[in-house]
Length: 176
Image (cartoon, rainbow, N blue to C red; front, top):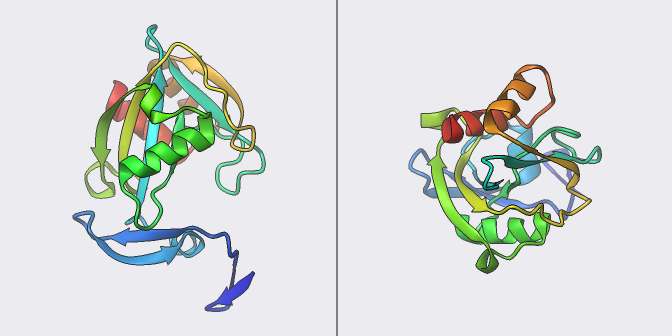
């Protein structure tokens, strides 16, 4: 650990690119500082695994997660680290969280969303993977999962089920 501006920072802290309104990199900052200052001009990737029945594979985050512990989440998600492209970040997060390799799955870009146009928490690309099998997820990231239709997921969240803040927004934008 070391101190920056009187704040304790973990050496493992990710370095993230800060972008302008056109998603062009203008600076870099530690993830902890980004969250401390509630910055929305960063990049993220999210992905949904969808089966042939039209259900999404939705995991629950572990209790040890710093943000949104025990909340429902997208199938895959994470920050785009400084210098990475959206595709590189998705490939990394897909392998880290689900054990899946991008070259071995049926994947497509579903959408590109921005905080300005879509009121989401960051600039991001959303991917969709077609699969009827639940992935062998990382137990450090997720503790359980559900196959659920987008409509039932929205109802569950609106009824009070804890979820990452962008999950319902993404599902509404992409699947309703």
